[in-house]
Length: 409
Image (cartoon, rainbow, N blue to C red; front, side, top):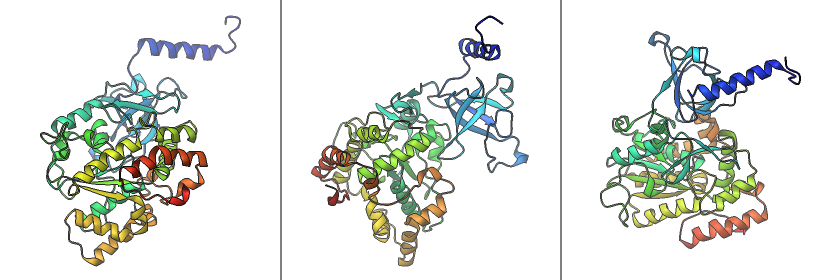
């Protein structure tokens, strides 16, 4: 060994890693792969409902990062069997290609995944917005070009996934199916499902009612479906005839705290809460997904105000305080006749303990407290004043219905 090399083994490993990076450009963040459950590449994938007599189970996933903790072939990927993917570790050794793992194709797989250095979160740029890395420009464009909705289709829209949007899903699915036995993983977040390769435009077209209830977090001018003729650049409805939207809004201070906790758990946000709160109040949204809370909700409020027959404006606080009234509003909006006993049963299913017990095991990352006013335990007086000045005040001035406690101001 040369003098000065304290650990020749590590030097050899470093040289190997450098050569792999320089000469073997097999992988990059954003590529899609499939990993065989139980194979040598599997670093912790749980078996699904796949039956042994159907052959090996292959799990689709998106390459997120290459932490290299366990060597140069160590990657973190999304487990895309569910609508809400978990992150797992895999080992993509060259010797296992075609046996333990294989490259998969999806729209936009070549699009780069970027990293926000202030927060450590990964994202892509789609339609001018920062979005989760599972969403692609190519997938979004395919939906804008080819995805034609039908009269009776329903969208649940919110700035971010949370208890409010999931409660609206529960209500809409229960009203449409006349049952509280619903699966919240079935209403697809289409921009993510198609971007991740779990679905395509043609498979969406084959979905039948009452499952044609979809989700989106885009503002109205960018929702990923083919806009009606004449909708672009006019004051006409951006929604096709007969399509309805349930838009869920929450006190932005509570929404900010909830989103911050979600970002820490799922998106590996590493920056302090102060940065997240400032981003939430900014006009651009900066380092958080899908832009500004205020811009998103002002745009949807304009559509709801001009086209109330197509957009139901739902405040999360109303869902918590009076779930039965929420069920009746949703049923009236969807033109569904409900027996009083069924309406009461659906209302009980919207209460947070019931939602958590039924859906928490499948969607553990999306349920936290389900309470109103949680921001008081987190925000300083300066942050409360910032939200009032930059978000709540402008929203109320525009006539936007919000349930905010005046005692905070």
